[in-house]
Image 1 (cartoon, rainbow, N blue to C red):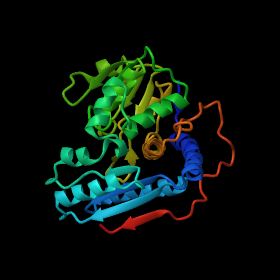
Image 2: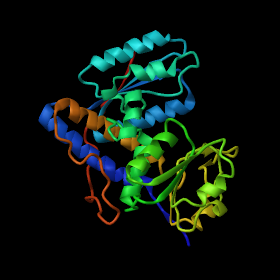
Image 3: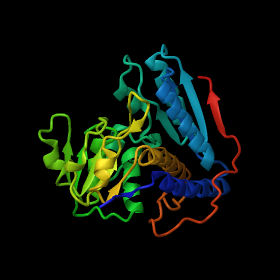
Image 4: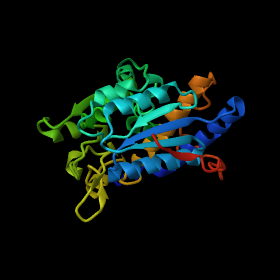
Amino acid sequence: MSARIIDGNAVAAQVRADCAQRVRRIREQAGRVPGLAVIMVGEDPASTVYVRNKMRACEDVGIVSRRLLYPDTVSEDEVLRRIDILGADPDVDGILVQLPLPKSFDLKRVLGTIPAGKDVDGFHLYNVGGLVIGDTIFPPCTPYGVMRLLEYEGIDVAGRNAVVVGASNIVGKPMALMLMQHEATVAVCHAKTRDLAQFTQLADILVVAAGCPNLITGAMVKEGAVVIDVGINRLADGRLVGDCDFDGVRKRASYLTPVPGGVGPMTVTMLLVNTINSAERALGLVPAGGGAAKPRNESAADGADVTGFGPIAEEVSP
């Protein structure tokens, strides 16, 4: 068996084409486009790249983005005041605080200051708690992207044994809750789990988000399992790899996401979907499509125009 490789870039492109159409509809009906504000403290190199990618993605679909860059010497209270201002701004539909923050910051306090209705990263306590009862406003972007990939490939989750490796608040825990909402039987493994393989070998759907390169080998995967590799790790030689031994796992899995080019493109894309959803809610518009990817056997319209909005990203001095 050789796994079908799930092309996250192709799925993301289809969802972004739908996002661009929804932005046009908002502009036609409301006279404005969705707005996203990104707060960044310090100049962490990885964060700089991530924020640049997010702003470029916004521009591609027509969302206005603002980057507010603070030095790492800024006080927590100053950042909180800026969040309050953005929360009251009707032209801002989404507020994102790029992590990590300086160690002196109270992360829970900062994330809790973002209004739940503008928390497009899905990190606010209300949105995280809402996952438990299936009533969150904004799902966290990475697990949301994973569910879109499964949907695109026509993979039925209901009744399947799903194992999530990694129990972070950003990916692992919300991923498990979202799989449960779709009626999977879910086990969550973490750093203290004994004999990891005894769990992974039972998984029909295996989601790995542990941040440990090549943690999952082919022998740890059930024949025919669907394997979603969320991890992204840079090796000493500069290569980017996931948490799975790609060559070993692809010989046993039925579906497998690559790294890079699998889950990564979907994370940023679902941020766009959440921001557009927020704008539609704020403006009282009926959502048009929700950013769903068409199943693989239903191709998107050829030549879909996802540009044409001009330069709408801006950097704002706090």
